[in-house]
Length: 289
Image (tube, rainbow, N blue to C red; front, side, top):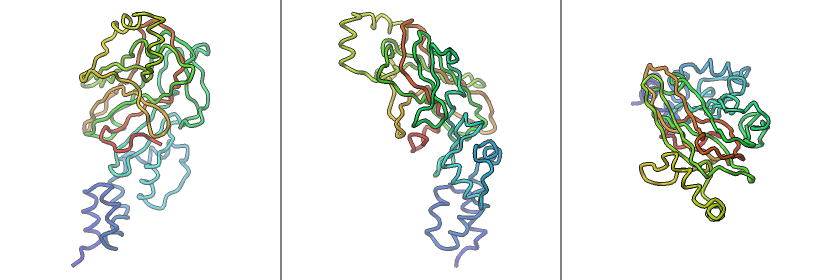
């Protein structure tokens, strides 16, 4: 005997978006229940209407809550196109990318240090390219209340290294993710570019042991003793992990994320900053596209 559609919808509402999406294969009753506004209303972020109203596509109309859910999975530019919002298709968990304009970059308003331009594969209208500086400080903030509760998040600086980059691998930068309410502070170090053995040999010939002396100003060894450096993303950019934090039900506090390199005093240039991504650590998708 087949269960009534309303009963099936109640059951699906206590599962996951992935289960609801696959339920249509069971029977026509499951398909109708799995498409219902009742079910998809349970999976939408509580403030989804506010999110849509902030988007650059806020005049768009939707025929169902499932269609709204699919739209949020495709990502939305919000807050005057300074942020990108997305939910994971299978878990419904929330991710954000804060654009370069939405974070703090020291001296970014000085044309002799940073230049702003449209990068073809960027999600945003402007990215920041470092021309030269001896003081690199990048900071961003986000409220835990806009994220999914009871979730472990990672923060990642999205960046590229240009062909003419210099001074990025002499001294590791310091990364930090500080959760203000709990005082939880996740610190580490990372180099700003990947290791190039030929360049390293040339630098050792030119600088002698200066690199080793400079690196001693920063704690560089992590638990596994491996060198930390940028990793490739599916979207063609690279990312540097800044740290991690956890959200709790009913909690709303500020999380401060940063990357700084101010101890080496050497000039550096040639990195392009697209923003900071905040995404669940258990998210299968490696990047927002």
